[in-house]
Image (cartoon, rainbow, N blue to C red):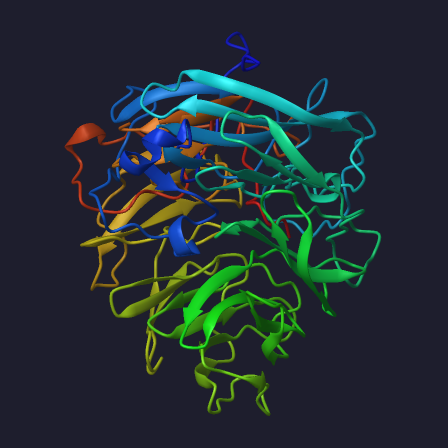
Length: 516
C-alpha cells in the first residue's frame, strides 16, 4: 500500500525531534541504523557512537536531507532499523484540534468520528515512502487532552517484529514489511487525571521489545497492569496487577546481577519486576501524583523522578533493591535508595546520564546536575531565556543540547543550543531557530538525527516529515523563524530534541507525548 501523502497541503512545520531507526528487509539491519524504541537503545536517550549535527536550517535546507509530508496527528517518535524509518500516525476526516501553551484546562477533546491508525515505512537515506498500512479504523474509545493525540506511544522493533501500541485500540504486531501478525485488545485504557475521572487525556506508555517478548505498562483509571507477551503470537506470558494512578512513562529493561528487570515509575507503586516471571522485586511509594518521566538506569543505579502535587523527588536506587523500600520521608534514603532530593525532580521531562552526571531539566528555566553516584551538592543553573523542553535531551561527547521555548505571549520559538558536557553555563549560541512542536523525542539513526513534527518528518543532515496542518486554537499571531547557523555549526554533539513550527496560521505547538 502506498503512503498517503498530500503535497498540496498548507505548510505547518513542527519539529519535535524523535529518533528514527530503520527496519527494512532484515538482511540490511546489521549494517544499518538502530534506534529501536522510545528513547533509543536501553531507553537512555543518548548516543555516543557517532558525531551528530546540532544545527540545521529549515528555510535554506542546510543539514536537512529530506522532508516528507505525513498525514494525521501523532506524538509518537519515529524508530529506525537498517535502512528504514518507521512512524505511526492517527488520521481522521477534516481538521484536528491541537491547543498549546501553558494553561490549567483539564477537559478532553471529544472526537466522535472514525480514525485510522497507521504504520508507515520510509527509506532512511532518501525519505522515499516504502509502504503504509492502516490496520484499524474506529471511533476512539477514549478522549484525549487538547495537547495530546490518539497516537502517543512510540513503536518498537527487532529483526522480525514491529509492535505499535495504539492505546485503547490495542497492541498491534507487524512483520518488517507491514503485514499484520496479531492484535491484542486490552479494552479501554483510560489514562487521565485521577482526581477527575471524567478528564481523559490519552494513553502514552510505549512498548519494549526484547528477546521475543513485548513488555507493556498500562497504569490507567481501572485495572492497571504490567505484562509480558510473546512477540510471535501475542499470548500473555505473565501479567502483574498494579494499584496506582494513571501514569505516562514507559517500562524500562534493566540488567542486574539478579537478572533482567522491568522497572516502572509511579506515584504509589514505582517498582521493578522479574522480566522472566513477573514477580515483583521491589516497590516504592511516594512522589509526584502525575508521573510522566520514564525511569533511566546507568552504572548499577535506577533513577526515578516525578512531580505535581506536594512532592517532586529525584531518587537513585540500587538495582539490587528488594521488598518495600519506601523511606520514612520523601527525601529519605536507606540501603536501597542511595540518594534522594525531595524537591528537585522533573515533572514532564525524563532526565539523562552523560559521563559522571545526571541532568534534569525543569520548566523553571533551569537545569539541575547531580553526581550520579552520590547526588551530593547538585548544581543548579538558571538558563535565562533557555529552558528545558517538555522531555529531556541527551548530551554526547563535548556538548549537551538544550532548547529554548517561550509559551507566555508572543510567537513561540524553539531553538537548540549546546553547553560543554562538563560545564553548566547557558548555551553559547542559538544554533537553530524554528517554532516548535514539543511533541516527540529525537531519534538518532546512522549519523543522522531524524525529526518528526505534527506535519512532517525530516532528516537532519540527513531528515524530516511534514504533516497536514490542523486547526490551532491557541492565540493567533504570525509565527517566526530565527535564522539557523547552517552547516558551519560544530559537529560531535548530540542531536536537538525539539524544534518547532513555522506556519502562516500563527504560532503552534503540541505538548509532548505525555499530556498534562
